[in-house]
Image 1 (cartoon, rainbow, N blue to C red):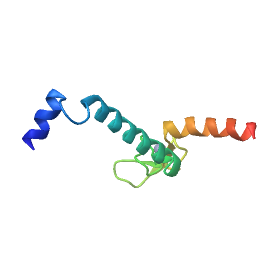
Image 2: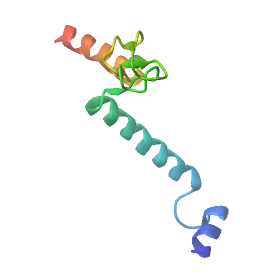
Image 3: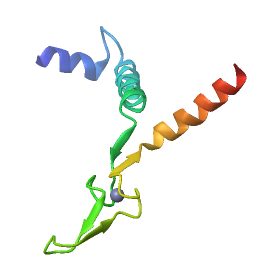
Length: 92
Ligand SMILES: [Zn+2]
């Protein structure tokens, strides 16, 4: 294990450190795109996904104004995705 760390520090043998950095970035990007594709919604940040705002005693509530009571919000990346999807469909 210490040998691999030493190799990474000196970038002798194996891949240089920036290749791993790019690979990690690509993996993260692929994960994000997958999230936008298959899980477009995240819980609303305003009401934490409940869609309602309760009074402290929880007897009364009102709909969340941000998500209009759905408790969901579209991920930012999904909005971009939808915009591109619209362009693609228009071009077809
Ligand atoms: Zn909400």
